[in-house]
Length: 85
Image 1: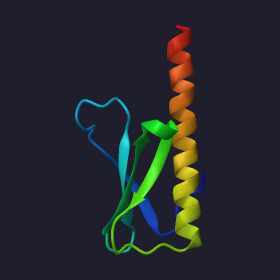
Image 2: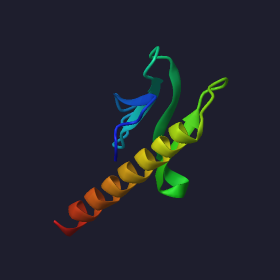
Image 3: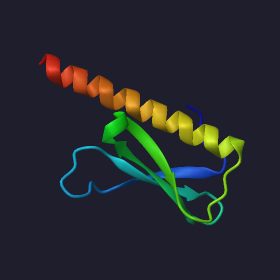
Image 4: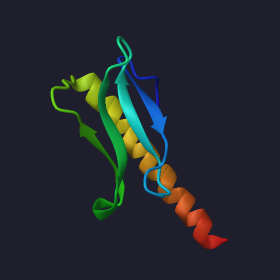
């Protein structure tokens, strides 16, 4: 995955004893919080939640989608490795 052009992902502390990771999405230009990526159990994947008033173009949305896909694949691979041990 290439470096996102306008946004960055900031790892957040795990909440409520959860084992899955979550990230804040922030603007590179002013560090404003734009949303977050966290595990959504019903869909068994990482999902994006944008904050009210945040606006995204296709470049940002592609970067967010690629990040969610990469982290979902990583989590599922780690789960497989853990099960086989």
